[in-house]
Length: 77
Length: 223
Image 1 (cartoon, rainbow over the protein chains, first blue to last red):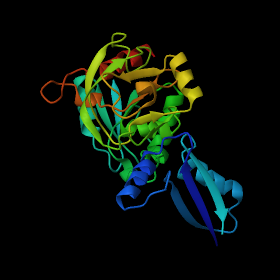
Image 2 (cartoon, rainbow over the protein chains, first blue to last red; image 1 turned 120 degrees about the horizontal axis):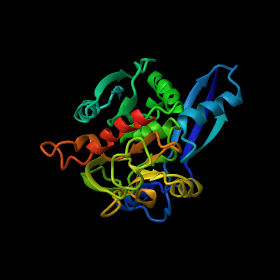
Image 3 (tube, rainbow over the protein chains, first blue to last red; image 1 turned 90 degrees about the vertical axis):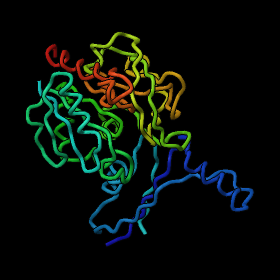
């Protein structure tokens, strides 16, 4: 088995309102100087060694991320 | 005419959708998410709610349910399909409609009666409406902001596939005030507001929503 990490982020052109809300909240805990926060999703998969990269990208592109609004990065640990 | 109404775990508005189908003069047929059988229905409504708890993304897991394979195949044959709210999200996730629905720009869950303009009567679900007709139906959603890339939006506008537009202010930041869109052949329509909650002035703000359900009666006969 191998640990695979898939990180999914909203595309740069998509207004990330959740990230903006977090950015604003930083001021309320007394932190200045953070210009922008963008919020994404982090998936950890334990996969059989036989699963190839093409399959991992299919998992990411067909289920974990919506390619209309999100980009993803697949990393084998 | 028999119109299927799909229920997923977490669907809330299937009962009202079935009631709207009955008010329009058709027979509602209950379809279950785990089944592989459309039971020979003449059209399908994918109603609102929070299918599978909206885990992953709103509508994402429901778009892969067994019944959706049948709905997709049916749509390919020209079967009229209407997605309302979560149903719209599901149809976008399933690739039956373009774009995606994301978190409202104001971050608030919006619940109010919303005026819409019927921008196209060239669909299976708006054929009985007047061009440019205004309707008043409830809107209740937290992830109702329609987005798509600029090229897709230009294509939708150019091909007359923006079916409904918000009037009186954009409630959620949707691109170009888009409240609902259709497939290229006009058989599949999705919208965020809820026409099935506005079919009788006793229980809704109007009976304006009924026109979607009466439209499909004519569409099925004609198609």
